[in-house]
Image (cartoon, rainbow, N blue to C red; front, side, top):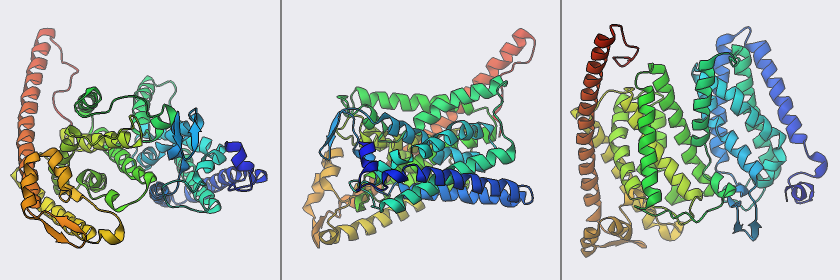
Length: 495
């Protein structure tokens, strides 16, 4: 199928041009890397790192816009019929290339903006090879990019190819230039370096899995994905266990290690959420729901260490995502795009702030934190009320109704809390839409009460942690007294 497309007159490039974009990408990478390492790095070291950081940000922006472009690969479902094409087998090569390359969006910024050897090893041993393979199999990617059947913005094939050339050139140039300038090599004889790599790489591969990966490799499957059934309970158990394991591994490690973990998870969440727009861009999918906004909120709060803003996010976003996790809106497509996106997004929305607070990147909550929460939530609620109200009033013109913060769809609200049906006694119709004004203050007050409950639960968790630490110290003291020598177990947190 791929070969026919490349050779046909309807393709983005005739057969004689096959490989042309690969050569252009490799040549551009070699030229820019040579210029950076030879002319800039030797004479202007500070300028070199500034350029590298600018290029990294540019790569991220290009990647975000890429998710809004047409991509026919979202229709490749193993054993599924889509667009009058039956896919008897998975396109394994395309799926693997995309899965491996997706890690670049989170790993490359970590390699450039931090001095972590682990992320520089991952960039050199994982990201660069997959960017290079994507370049070698350029036409394999373009077969899907050039299709006008995707749900994103269509770009003419030649321009789309140039766009992908730019992205791959940046990805390879950044990694190659950084490793050459730092003279960074993987320490083959260092057992600790091997251990870190072999432990981190499977986690990175799993966390950076695109939402369409499993549907393209194994299909939708017959797995039952229902609320409060085996799959749902399994998800909650894995999420809780994963968060606890990461906390226990990193709680006594250096501040840099703890910060790098949370920053990496924040980047993964940010790019994973934005990959949603591969499935199309619409008013209901604007990032206005709390769990959607979390990807953007955390990108402000954690990299820039905004303490007050983080405390607002911690209370409001965790409360919101706990509701979403306990009462999920699963699709019927098993391991399809929507279910994996829902699971990954809400898992990370919960995990990131829990780890950031548990690993002491930010101060503990106090009563003053409730003030920040109240101010922030009032602003958010007013924004949802105004934007959602206006869009629904003019839904005749837009063709789409929205349900921001779940305050406009009465049927959806009744599916969660049946007693709210009494608000139907006071309907208000504006334009083509009927509002229920009594429902909005109920949702506002109810959510605030849940935030207060979560605040009290958090204070209780603080006391449990303090008691556990005291018991741990007592146990270490007894062990040292019995053995007659100091214990290697750390007593205090490293702050």
